[in-house]
Length: 320
Image (spheres, rainbow, N blue to C red):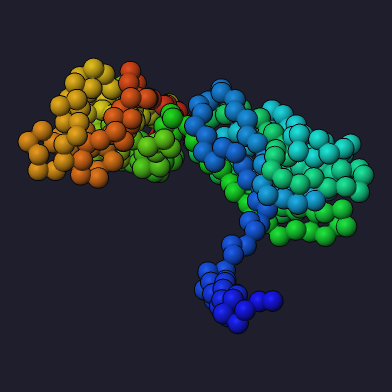
């Protein structure tokens, strides 16, 4: 027989649990997610890379259907293959189709069963065709169970960019007369991987060559003296990417000099005589193991200038 005091304790315990569940409810189970892995890709023209279409925390999945958009000026689809997630459960039907700027992919278990858990639905291999950047975006995605009920879910996209810069310029007017001032504007040039454009080198096709930094040579003007002639315009841009993490002395590489500068500063804080702000890579006010482990994996790396060229043509008429 339960005593009165014991019964009161049980009631009190249930009351406490009820209050805790009200104030701190149990976390809801995570919704399924379809995501592109990895979320960031850095590749250069001519190189290939493979992404995975991954599903996470799904229950009883029988059928999936997605569209994946990309920039066909930057990327070319090499292959699309089925992942192991559904076919580990049983026979499947898999297919895909290429649109103008997207891939449509689907897969279903031919038996009325479902797969549960996390895994790869498909793999897509691309080749990088040019310099630039683009998003890889999942849309019109569906997850369906054996009863043909669609599941709510979230998605995760990816971003692709090249280390090499994009050289670009406009010409105004594009059909000038002899002696007319022409403006060449390279403001549309950019570095997808970060860094600064340090030099704009112009060859204007008639022997005129100009170069300089953004202040001097991003926008240049010129007047042609030829009559009814075509000139080839060549712009070469040079980009200096950001220095590798761990570059203490600012010479764009991580070497023994950087390590020897970090060593005496190790363990110091702001205000200490040996504190070196250039060694405090995470800017938390001290030089510790986090900063050391930032330098270590980048030892031997260096920043190398990268170039790209854009060519265009201009026709100069004989009118003045």
